[in-house]
Image 1: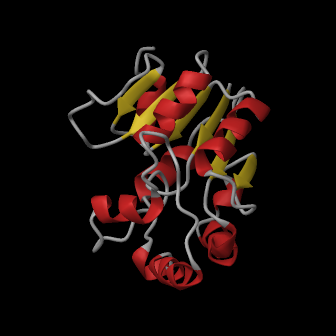
Image 2: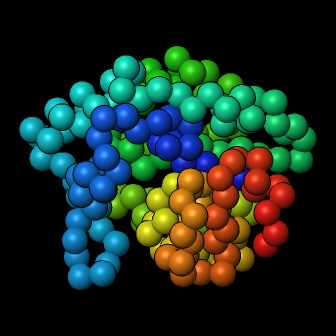
Image 3: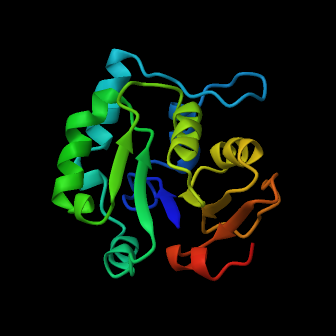
Length: 183
């Protein structure tokens, strides 16, 4: 089975002092109900580099440990991150620091600065994924609509799952649930 995982908020926490709605405004672009992400300006890139520094982006230890002990036989694990190119150095250091390169069979990053949902859609298709885990529900809605045979998992602590639009998206609160959630 081919299983893909996002990086941020799956294995690396977001900054603890910035509310999620502020982060979403920094990343998303309002475009009349179409999913669009903002490519940050140079001053904003500096800010985003600062909030991606290690003290502000702690590992989600239980998720990393789950995959470290996960039996890989008959499974290929892929890390698919839509981080932009200006975060390449910080991202590469983070991968080494937490030894994520020892967990995944292959890792893919959006360092060419494509729209994140388009980049991830192309990776889902290229890698012939069976399952994919992400924390970004609008992005998952986009992917699930275009990839009906793939099971998508929304890793969330939210109880309200009414905004899940597609039948192939399942809300989970732990990574291990991708093997126990029906679908």
